[in-house]
Image (cartoon, rainbow, N blue to C red; front, side):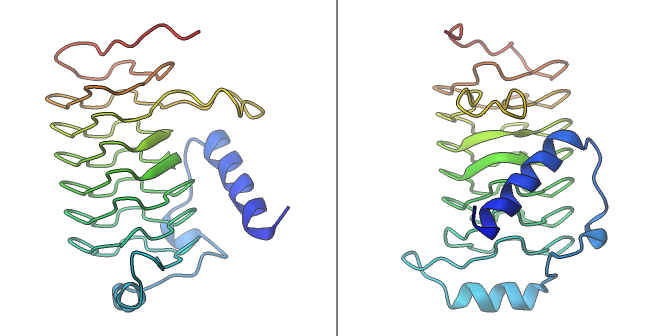
Length: 203
């Protein structure tokens, strides 16, 4: 197993087993970047050659309005960062951490959000259409967010560490658009919606 793959597996295990994680400043081994370093790296990137920000610590940064150009943000630390109106479309956010992060009006279309930690994140009016979303969204604010055609169904092929599904407990989904989405086996307990979402019964 390659080092990067091994690190992702360990991060997935931590995400599943630890309900509360250390503060962003306590992430040893995750290189801490400044806003200026992130912007400089993105300036050298393109759609055909996206920047690799794998396991970088971007916590607490003001990254609002930035175009990430499909960057690899797998295992990145984004806790409490300001990503309002940022373009994160097509980004790889697998096993990334965005607890308490401001993602209002962010563009997350087609993003890979597998095992992403979004507890308490602010996703009001964010666009997640077409994203692959399996993660922890407890207490997240998804008011008026676009979740159309999201693949939020449980991962039935990878159950060695338990059921991998979207955890959307106690979230705010008022006015959210979930049309055409699949959230089979997702947990919406105690979430605020105008109408409880329904999907076909799982096989």
